[in-house]
Length: 501
Image (cartoon, rainbow, N blue to C red):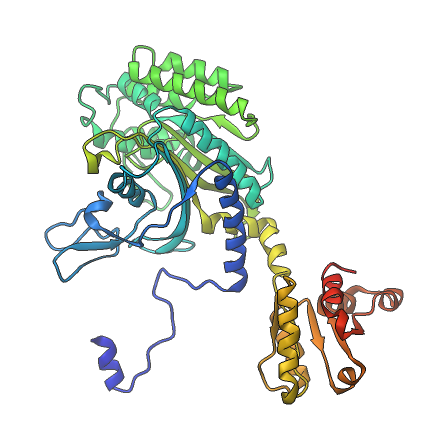
């Protein structure tokens, strides 16, 4: 209606993206696709199958975002259809999987291994680097109770990061177990296995405090476990209100990391002594560590880390995060760690909402935009994008555009990306400027003289740019940036030029 009113008033719509959204252009899109293709190849190699679900789910299926009297929770983009049902854009790729696992359980293999990639939407306040639409890439196993499934996901994530272009040594997978944390909470008087919902709010405050260890340090976390913390701006965050003895138990848990996995596990076992839940968590981590070692995933790629808690409440067992360890410069030029690009864990109760029966599941989610930004920061994405332009076939005369189309067709048939210039052929300079703007590595030129000789001229634009800025006279003579070849040799000559020959 508002759009109609503006149109009636003769007012043009503003050409701008909605707040919290963004556009993606050529190099970003092709770079992201190449990265996801590499990740998908790893998942496929492990026997996982692709799954595409609808971008729209019922709000009921999303579960954690049930509507109130008038409208759903503001965390999702939701609307009411003509039948009165509440629908919403998917918030993540896990809730749709739970719905699929329940809806198609009679037809799916058990366990069901799947991976999914695509955009998700969150109706949250946007900020610097925080958007309302972003991409995720998930891999999950549904129906396997053994922690071998968790170990497989962790190992596969390491392989996927390396396939995407993150070098070994530039990342670390950190693993913990929510059962151990529950055992620690039990020792601190915040968890009762017979009444797991009791003290839930207090445990949530403790979890959020632990999750801030890297940013606030031990002093800041201890303050949040107690009365609360005031930051530098004067803002006060209420704490969990734990007594000193309770806080000591939680802080000892965070400090239980030893020199190696075995030492860490011994320290954790001592902390949860007397808790059956905690002991079960330690045993599961021991099995995961052994399976990772058997898979060739050593401590330089994955480690046991008690500080990993993961924020979502539906995790029931092992949890894991992938953290990039290299530094990049921030906007002020200061070095900073890139941080987490993936995370996940075991969520055995999520499908139960639909079936009433416990269905074990575990999975990981990669933040696609963040991982792609990390690759760009390391130069991998930029290098790939620099060679992504098409060969441009110029047009010297309108009457010979069909020949230009034929040459572009031959190049594409040979697997070489190519396009024909479609602007006014009278200004040849504009054609070369267009080719530069397209990051074209080669321009193909066939004027009347070349046509009469059965030849074409190839202009090596990438080499020309390099020679123009840093070449000696000898290099100019040894590697001319332009050459004439027989028309019949077009494909072979372009391929050689692209290869640097």
